[in-house]
Image (tube, rainbow, N blue to C red; front, side):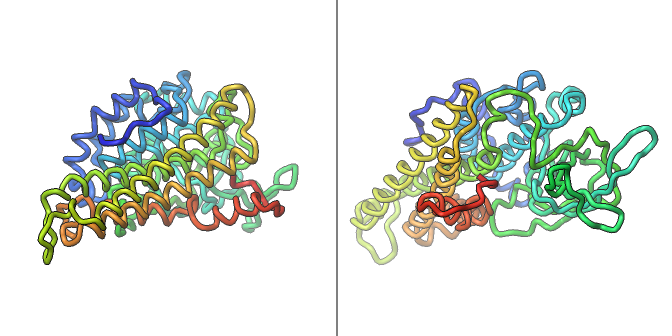
Length: 398
């Protein structure tokens, strides 16, 4: 893979796992896109390697790798197909969140089936009322969640929600915060809705899902604003940063694939109305050079910001506000830079880019869905910009 090396040397074992699937993923990408989700046979085989639990503690059948490994694996998979990379990163991050459950509950999820895949949506779109069922305390949960990426492959799905009284008023915790929780549910008890009719990342299966008056045992929930995960470096790493890293890594992998695709046919393609191949046109040379520089610079900032925070986390420190600020800025910048690179390659490809057989059109559609995610939106630039200029701001989402 041209110019795909990272100076931070991800673990060779997990990169070899990703590489072992790359050709199959590339070959089957159209199959996944047409059906709207990654086929279960591939998801199961990826799960058997432990890749969905890349950052999960070994005590829960995880590989216990770093966010740098997570970023590198996701980027590499995206080089083959953005949708597969997306659902894998969702599985990785949701598996990390399982560790916030009481230990017995987390073990039930992961020890009952060491390859069980998880997915979930953090947004508090559900409403839950405390109840007792038999001898078990829990909640009656009702809600509908959007953007359920990877749900069709998952054994358990989480959904965020507020705890309310019987009249629907949101309850407060002892310290005055709204009682916001994450609820883990078996996929067999969830209704998956056919809503994922979109322009890009079609194979992520990011459909809406809903439940109505579903009993969720108390030990299958946790406080979504005060996570109580066990000690470990990965749990000192900001959860919002982990989500943003996955989005940016997908975008970077798509951008590298687009550059390599364009360069691959530039010497053979002679644009209509031109007397020389695309590769010999000064405008092509200039645009490719600019794209290469922008992509490499964005990757450098991306991996450097992750590395700095991870180093602190492994030393038992919480990453500072400045560290968290830089990761959010680096992930947003990387996603936007990747989109600009892909736009350049798509335009340079001319008529070749628009055909369904061209990867360029899929990369173009996929990255412009990724840029719409709230974690890499302009609101993030406004948030970190306030910190740079010294304006008081709410840093909860860093």
